[in-house]
Image (cartoon, rainbow, N blue to C red):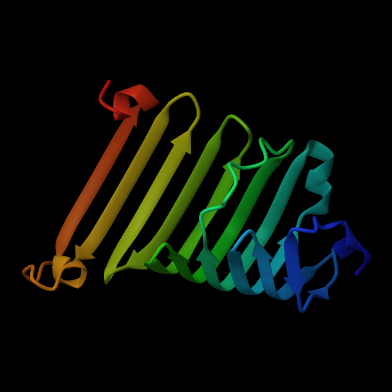
Length: 173
């Protein structure tokens, strides 16, 4: 419990159980309007010796994300690695994803993510790398446009996207 005293005052942690060595769980974690419910995770504390915050597994029942009111606090002085992530429900500005599974690794200059999820009845997979260039691979299966717009016809679309370029190239410049 003494470790929770080091959490920033803007982070709300409720129903904390477990220990730093092993699985930790929380009934609720909140920060700047975003909230996660029924959270369980396990840290790799040895990774801190290589300036990496490594979460070996992360389980979240529901995650509600809000756009932060501030522009952010700048770069985090650690690399971050999230392995074996599962979130049952994610809601962001009225959009909802289900069955999110994925991983993330990143630093101030490089970000890599791999995720799969379902939304609006379709199943999606996304692989993304961002450094001085963007590399993206996305696949959507069984997309029924009628779920998004009831006046549209029933569909079962399949879409694949693959791209690589600089931010200016993606913007059309």
